[in-house]
Each structure stands twice: as structure tokens, then as C-alpha cells.
Image 1 (cartoon, helix red, strand yellow):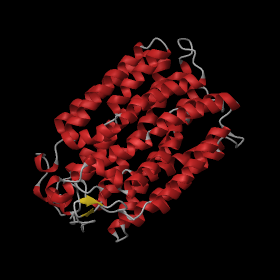
Image 2 (image 1 turned 120 degrees about the vertical axis):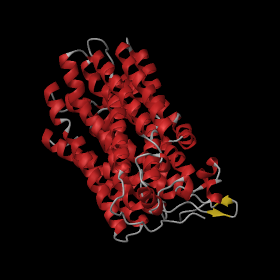
Image 3 (image 1 turned 135 degrees about the horizontal axis):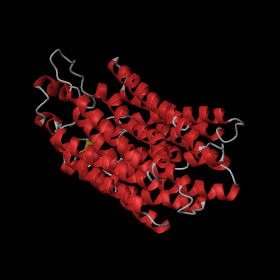
Image 4 (image 1 turned 60 degrees about the vertical axis):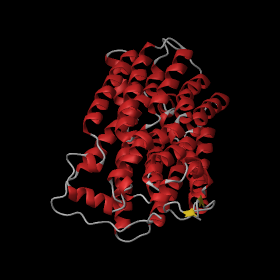
Length: 445
């Protein structure tokens, strides 16, 4: 039987720190991933001379990405566990970079739908791969901060999309945006393939670092219990813990995907932002979210080092973050733009803190290292139904009501429902256990 959370081995003088180089490299990959994903939402308001799309049509274009991205999550998580982070991240980055570049050739509504769908396929393995990297390379007491680093790549990608995309549009043309950032993704993929290896295969990691990460709770093949590694993939859905992870992450992403899709349009249409103001002030919530996520990860790791239980730390971070994220419902009703930006920054920052806890869960509860990517894919599969539903619902409500008041109220309430789920429905956070040869149907309660 796997140990719940082994005591960490203290870092010693002479221990290499390859794991930190790797996680920052993963951060760069996720930044590019989300830059590619968010570029259309920034460019779309300024593509009017080529496309004349209603808000509902824009929502469908955004949703097309998530139809593919979400449909591939379960397979993507299994694939990451099967081939490992090196190959999965490399192939994914090459794929998504190609279809990002081809978006510059789009000619209308249906070509945008098709290209976004294909982009979604390529991006699907990225988050599960990053979660697998953290589980493989980091002890439990460093897991939250490492997770906050790669997860903040999604915020950084969205933040830099604003000045990068608006700058390229002003300098060149919106079509050039997609070619440039697609080329950047290919370069990153080659660097990842050259540098990444698992701990025992990496030429730069010494024996002290390998002992430190494995002795501290890293999830590797060498630390797996044999019977736990044999749990079938399909059996994961029998655990209440896993079902709670799926539903809770859906609630979180119902709010986050507003920032990834309609946030620029909200600032332009509802608050009257110009291209210059959008590129400058629109970056504030994302920057605040990055700093909040890092701070949340550091504090969570510090609490675990001081003896707090993983269950208490993860629940505090996730529930508190979702409650804070719910203030988005007030952003649409305040009279001044600076007030709205303040509330949106608080919301996005709080959600990012919650995300560091949520993305730590696959490594925390996986019965073996062979299930980390799969659990990441499982919870991400459920969460990205929000990516399919949220853009369509927001777009339709904006068309029906003429403002963002109702859609922001709805997603704010969903954040509170998610907080209740993690607080009450999810039980103890520990590796899923076996009863005989079958999993416990209510394990984690």
C-alpha cells in the first residue's frame, strides 16, 4: 500500500536543483500554450474588417477549441502516463504551434471553427504533463509552489497576449500575430526535447537531489507500491474524491474561462477601453493573479513543512480561493472602470490560488505515479465543459440582455457552489486506497 505522505528528506549542501530549471521551463511552455489560446480573444475585437461575427458566433468560435480540448482530456492524461512528459509535451507543442500559425490564414466563421478545434487537440496534453512533471520531480513540501509556477504560465500567457497581440496588430496585421507566436512554440518544443529527462535519467541531477525528491514524496516508478500501480484507469471514476475533483474544477473554470474568452471584449464594449488602454490596463488582473498564485503556493508549502495536514492546507487554499473568486459578480455593476478592474483582479488572483491547490491534487491522491497524468486528465476533462458552456452562455446572455451583468452574476454563484463542493463533499486528501483487489467506492471520505 502506498504511504499517505512520507516525511520529506531535508535538502543538503551539494544537492543539485535541476527540478527548478525544469519547472520554469514547463512554465514557459504553459505561457506559450495560453498565449496561443488567448490570442484570438484579444485579436477578435479588431478583426471586424475581415469578419462580422455576432457575440453568439464569437462564443461558438471560442467554444470550438474546448470541444476538442475537452474531448481529448481523458485520452491525453492516459497518454502522458504512457509515454512520459518529455515526449507528450514535445509533440503537443509542435501540434498546437502549427495550427496557431495556420489561424493567420482563416477566411471566415467556419475556418475559424475548424482551426480552433484542431488547436484544442494539440493543447490537450499540456496541463496533465505539467502536473506529471511536478509529481515526478518535487517532494510533497515543494509541490504547491512548483504547481503555482507552471500554472501561472496560463496567466502569464493571457497577460502577455494583451500587449503582444495588440502590439503586433498595430505594427503589422492581425494575421501576422498567429504566425509569430506559432514559431515561438516550435522553438520551445525543441528546447524541451533537448533538456527534459526523468530524475534518474537526467545527467544534471546528482544522487543527493534524486534522494531528496524521492524520499520527500515524489511520485515515481521507483516509489510505487505494486498493488496500487495495478488499479485500472476506469476504476478511478468509482472514487468520491475523484468525482469531487471533477465537479469542483468545473466550477473554477466556469469563472476562469471568462478571463480567457470575453474579458477583452468586456473591457472594450462595456468599459470603453481603446486598443492602448486594453493592452496596458487589461494586463493588471492577470499580473495580480500570477503574484497571488506564487504567494499561495509558497504559503501552502510552508504550512505543510510546519506540520499542517495536506487535507487542511489544500482545502483552505481551494475553498478560500473560490470564495474570493465569486466577487466577479460585482464587477459588472460598479460605476467606475477602476472599481471593476479591482474586483476582477481580486477574483482572478483568488481563483489562481485555488488552482494551485486543485492542480496539486493529482499528485496528492494518485494511487501510483502511473495515475498522476490520468487523474490530471480526468479532472481537466470535467473542468473544460466550462470552456464549452461558458463562452456560449455568456455570449447568448450578452446578446439577450445587452450587458455583462447577468452572466457575471451566474458565474460568481457557480464559484460559491464549487467552494461548497471542496469543503463538504470532498473528504480527506490522500492517496486512493484499495480494499482487497477493488477500490473503495467512497475512498477519501
